[in-house]
Image 1 (cartoon, helix red, strand yellow):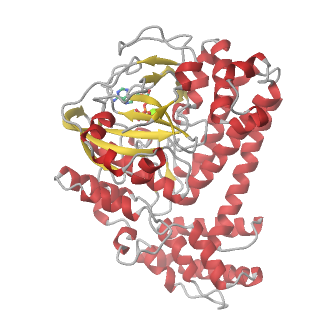
Image 2 (cartoon, protein in one colour):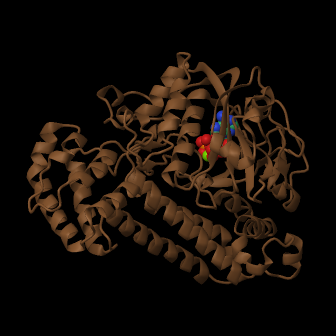
Image 3 (cartoon, rainbow, N blue to C red):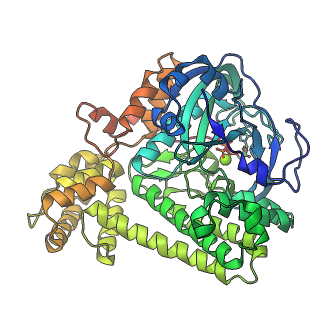
Length: 535
Ligand SMILES: Nc1ncnc2c1ncn2[C@@H]1O[C@H](COP(=O)(O)OP(=O)(O)OP(=O)(O)O)[C@@H](O)[C@H]1O
Ligand SMILES: [Mg+2]
């Protein structure tokens, strides 16, 4: 197994002179060298062949015992030079100080044959200087969720960190799942995540909070150079040191960078709102600078449409991270990033321009999502208004978000008064549907009229709708079933679910069960409707 590494993060940014996992506050440094702690019996449970292929790994590499050893944290490949990154963050609205990779350890930045950079990072690989009071480990149930959802998001077309592998450690990890004084041992696991960059908003917030403008500037310049090279135009690919000497990183360039971060974040949230994903812990340390979904913890998927739903038990009181608030939370988080970057700007105008670009891009995404899901040609305010009315009805009548949007393409829009029949199976309770049936029918009549005025031929309309509204998403209960089966010794559920989710927009005859409404047993089952941060 061979990979080519170019560890730019270590080479170009200042590091912690101390090594090893001892807990400490790390000043003036972006990273600390620390090796994964070996585990008792690494065993490969699952891998994503697409990610292995992207890295240039062959099937034989994945099957070899070396693979489980490396991606379980027991061995290193030549060129790997493991580190934990230093960052801070706002958690639930409050500044939390230094956080850092407490259980994530980056192994190196692999360069693929096509020149793409893929940082390989183990999650659950043991203690680091940033582990605070925790153990640096992760349990199998949360690792299965991270592995499956990362890949599902990619196939759904949502920007995300990827998952190469899921390795069982053969060791127990003690967790108090509901923070109710009942800790118990659970099987441990390590996921290898893959992304061009794991830089977070909190990466910039930490040096800014300490008044360390030199490190803040170094991080910003590095991030532009490595992660946004297209902003450098003809200078892309030249050594960072040369560009610094030529003072290329002026305010105009940094402003363009911040603006792009804002726009990418808006598009990311647009995708989440389209597919019904609730991140659950949108702290600034869980916001990727590249606008990728990162940190699959107590996330959830919307079953019955409810903009106020949050899956995170830690968040039940304020519901800060509820589904419908994600657009405004992302904006707030960008505000914290803007504040952190402000020492690099003479005045606030360029940062405000970025935040305004967020609002404009999000508004555009919301309109485009609405019109694509309704199968309308033009993205206009009329389509958006129609969507908002439908969402209010879905909420009141208890419609399954995924299934209702999918079934909408079966409505006969040639009829003046289309029948509700094609939608009926997407509702959870007949009496709630009955109470709203007249309002839904009135909406359908207006919708059908709009489709006819729009003039898109049936086939094109349906294709547009199916491309925007998935048939299959990793519903909370589906992931939990895979977890339960794995706990009982059958890991086949992980592979089956991953395979279904490889084609989320296809019909996949024979696999309809994976698109079924949430069953009643999942309503109050841990892992399905409520998830704790204990992972
Ligand atoms: N078991 C653990 N051991 C050590 N540190 C942990 C552990 N769980 C969480 N942390 C750290 O606590 C902070 C916030 O936790 P959060 O739940 O956002 O992250 P996470 O799920 O560990 O990681 P990531 O954001 O890397 O996916 C991070 O600094 C994280 O590394
Ligand atoms: Mg996190």
